[in-house]
Amino acid sequence: MPSLKIVPQYVFFVLATLILIVMACASRQMVQIQQMETDIIPKPMVMTTDPGSVHLTDSFSILCDTDDKELEGLSSTLYDWCKKFLDLELHLKSTKQASESKQAIRLTLQKMDPVLGKEGYQLDVTDNGVTLQANTGAGLFYGLQTLIQLFPATQTENGIQYEAVLPFVHITDKPRFSWRGMHLDVCRHFFPVSFIKRYIDLLAMHKMNTFHWHLTEDQGWRIEIKQYPRLTEIGAWRVDREHQNWSERTPPEPGEQATYGGFYTQDDIREVIKYARKRYITVVPEIEMPGHAVAALAAYPELSCTGGPFYVMPGGYWPITNIYCAGKDTVFKFLENVLEEVAALFPGEYIHIGGDEAFKDNWEKCSDCQARIKANGLKDEHELQSYFIKRIEEFLISKNKKLIGWDEILEGGLAPEATVMSWRGMDGGIIASKAGHDVVMSPTTHCYLDYYQSEDQEAEPVAIGGYLPLDSVYAFDPMPPELEPSRQHHILGAQCNVWTEYMPNGNHVEYMALPRLCALSEVVWSPREQRHYEDFLRRLSVHYKRLDALDVNYRNHETGKAAKPTPKTYYSE
Image (cartoon, rainbow, N blue to C red; front, side):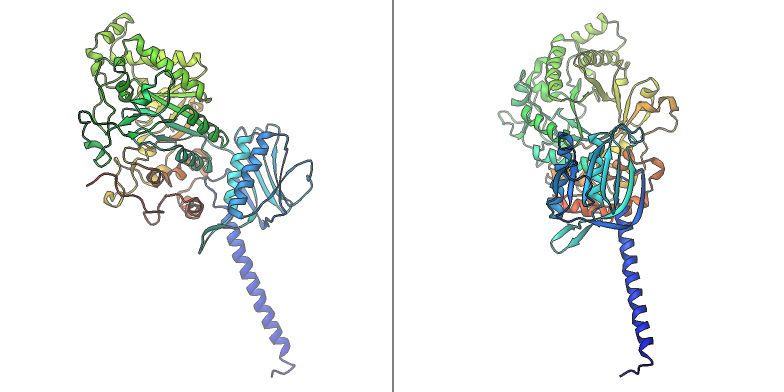
């Protein structure tokens, strides 16, 4: 038994040890909090942190002006997330009921703050609770995405679980570009409405605001048009060749039925648009013309130069010379009727008309097309395509819509108010912006997510070719350095494209899209000077837990493997 003389020394030793333990725990807690604060994707514009955190309980409330339906809807979004992932049922209250409560998350629309603009937000987490304010509902929605990412996610035996704790943080944030887009081709392979909604959720999670829906193609017409039922009765279906390589698929046999495909009814379209609107995503439909139109020609062969017959292509054939005839007025009447229904369905300001890869062999031989060239004093078939696009633009303007197309619409002269989506590099976008046209940058070098993610192609699911690793997407800058400041406002932003020749299901689409979508989100949202690849990779490693919680099949950049088993290639070797 120790003597009384050494007890003080013993007590001192114990106290010193306890202090060291507490300090170590506090240090670990501070490291954890710091980690929590900086693992946001895309990275915010300005963020500062303070020691401390807020722990949410069932006594917390979500406060907003309940007379504002938009705010009430945003509050419900947060409520649903907390119930699902935190197992907390927060109280939805009006600011008039509990404005002084510290145990609250306040959502506030304020008078226009020029710093935040239309899509920015300010988020503060302090010992007085959580305050999120913005000029618009869109800004509040993006702030909610950041708030959700502040909750730490941990791996447990039962999977990924979120902790109901928020670090003290102050964030002022807004996007760098107004067009933050992702594309999905649903023609090479058809995806149900349930997956389209899931895809939109992934875009919204990363603060993307544009969904480019590629709805018509040689391999399938996917949108119901009431005036032309054969577009979906015939054009939406092809013979099943899913066991064959996409580029080697055999044509239909005589009498063989077309059984592979599908289409979206107009009610489906409305449902998707409503779903996207709640997530502040604009849906831009693409109706291809004058090329990539064989599915439509299979239904209405009289719209071609040759009269057919045609079949919906079961795979990839090249070149595709059958396109809409530019010499027949009936073709323009057909397209105007189609676009009238499309314009009535989609509330966004843009309709994408494609315009790419229109091989003009048939135009050169077609008496109607040659007569059109002569009657309008056109130089050649390139100017005939320009005539085609300009005529379509006039109609879209009459419907209060803007035309956007791939950079081939520059050939022969650009339509007066057209917006260019530059995919064959950035030169087309630079030319268009210098001529006073708006531009969305989408070059293959940085934005084509059907390309392989590894140089070891044998280790990857079959893709169309090319090589686009994560760091190449992250290194992309949509703003050309040579573009003079007076023209830079024409660069609306950027988008990545997902062409699905080799993606037969949503599981495969997710693998090809993520995490490259995460990289793009930071390219189009975060300030250029704030982006650093190594920092992004560190945050991405934490972000994977959020994707795991949603059961997303991303490709882990650290392991080179899918988060879930990815189906083998859909055709036999």
